[in-house]
Amino acid sequence: MCEIEFDDDSACDKLSERDHVARVPHRCSSCGAMIHPGERYRALFLTSVDGPAHEKICPACLPDLEAFNRAHGVWVTPSSFDVLLEQCIEDEPDSRPRWEPVLEGIRQRNRIARGVPR
Image 1 (tube, rainbow, N blue to C red):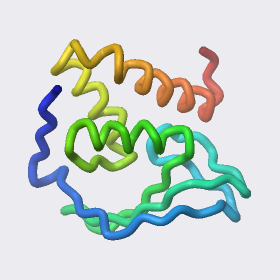
Image 2 (image 1 turned 180 degrees about the horizontal axis):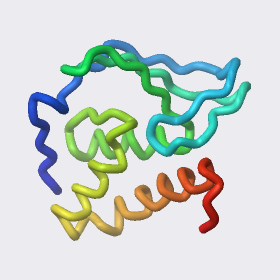
Image 3 (image 1 turned 60 degrees about the vertical axis):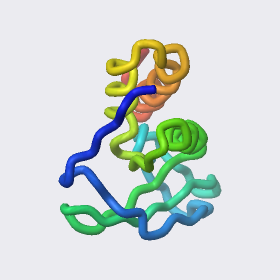
């Protein structure tokens, strides 16, 4: 398993998390996909050296983020998930079969959200 190290600037505290049904459109903080009215998502409120932040995560990213957090014994924010996946795959090549499809899914949803063809 890779070793994810956080410096003081990247550490954060999760103050709250709640599942919601969107009333207005939102963007997933992890993949950038639209969260449309009527869709479920998780809202997170956290604080770091940069101050308080609100992040939202779509149903496609949430199970993978939770699995990554459990596997690594850490809590990572949706907005840093792709970078930490890349770091994990680079640090521990044996993890590639598990995490590379997750990273590619995030990238694909991001391309779709931005209207970029495959």
